[in-house]
Length: 431
Image (tube, rainbow, N blue to C red; front, side, top):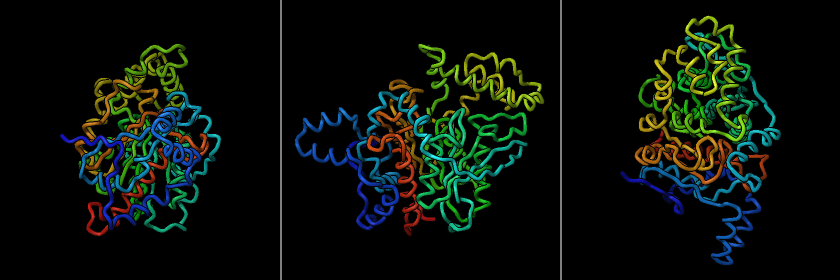
């Protein structure tokens, strides 16, 4: 096994690919922040000053795990953002605060501009696709890429990370669309089948719907948190032939995934100072509200006991009471095993970037299963791990918390690199 643990060196683009690299970077590189300028000055003054500056601002390069000499190395040669220092905002003292800044404060600086389309599923369910701004208009070329985003648990298309990602793709001239799980974001629940994280079939319906509207357009995926779990499974299945050819996508960026849901559930089971800080309390409260809102649907399934869901004090109890009987899982562990991203990553044959932070409050710095080996042994995947970034946040140091996140820049630069290699005649991704 060959593990690439890259810290300081970026794979070098071939001489003929230098213009391609500039193309991939041009749309995502903004003006240098104030810290870039100060950093250059201080770095010239000596090693000790440089170390102090890095320590004070928590600057650190991401750690990358991928297979050396592979297709992924060619893609990373076109992604310089991954080889530069990343630091969180000064006011984010830890991963939890970083997440709150993203969810609460950043949300106030972006406006939702969606056009909704409902999509029916073969089992009678309904998902919604919220198209950003002018994405459905015919002014854009037929082959303009489409970015499909999927939200985290208890979220919807109006979360800050969804809005900003769609906005950034649209600024690059792409179409962007946000998918809502069943019953989320005022999407009607039209069957007694609730949302669940392993429901990759709904992602296929979303991709198929996009293909029907824009058959010449490449489709890219971004998943956040549990949305990343779902999309990891989906990409692995699509590349294994589970879904028809119209379900294939050109690239994926999966942010804040836990990779092993059983571990994540165990992690959030640990005692909190206040019950309100216990993620189980938050999750179970959400599930209780979900079943109350759609009790008229769940009453149609005699196998679902709504009182057990409302009485649950653990996430696993709530999910066992509603997901297992509704979807036919024999027990909750069978459901969690179906979600497990570590088993799907080796099956992926689509360029895919996984992004996580060590200070993610859902996982912690020690112990969580991470796809070091899985991504290091798959030429189509890379695992990017940062010291800071919180959960689905990765806000930048230089622009406060009101604009483009570092993760937005990473995603769009990675997708641009995929596009560049796809357009290169004779290249490994040439379409």
